[in-house]
Length: 269
Image (cartoon, rainbow, N blue to C red; front, side, top):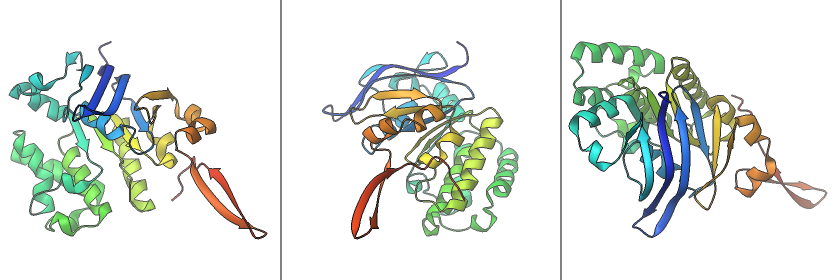
């Protein structure tokens, strides 16, 4: 199918060749889909996203991008690599990994400058993002002085300015206050409406229904144990409990402490 952007077949990856992180992953991602990867810590979610972005490479199996096998050799080709980086944008969970310039403005424009965009086009896109993200007052500040939420907005801006066709996000709302989370969720939904493919990993089941057409659960065995529409996944409480995705709450009642699982399926701000 011409609209398949990523296809993984039996993809496996181990750190240092002996610590498995992914085991036999099979996924097809269609242009324009919203995909969420959920799972407990250590189930391979971040590793999976880094493989999609060509930051690391599978030990076994194949990954294709628009029908072209994606591997270290093809990404060493300057022409292919440039086009791939224009089409695929990656937003790290830790924004400090992504922000390294003296000022916010320099960080945002760094990518398009490296990719050869014209200065007037960069300025036009920058002004648009400043308005969308409300970051005018941050432009001349050092990134390391920003809050977590401000850093996340700047990291997103530094990716969106390239206008990639595919956005890959590792825990996009982790550590953020509800209002900033809502702003980012709305932004992702808007980008998807424009036709962008959105691929996210998250622990936050509050947001899964909004940012997903299909949800994949990664297990402690580093495998996909189930996938489907968000309603199907979120309503399977037993599956979520088994995979450590249900919050455990305790409360006191008549001098006894009761412990019970609790799933939040809606995100209120």
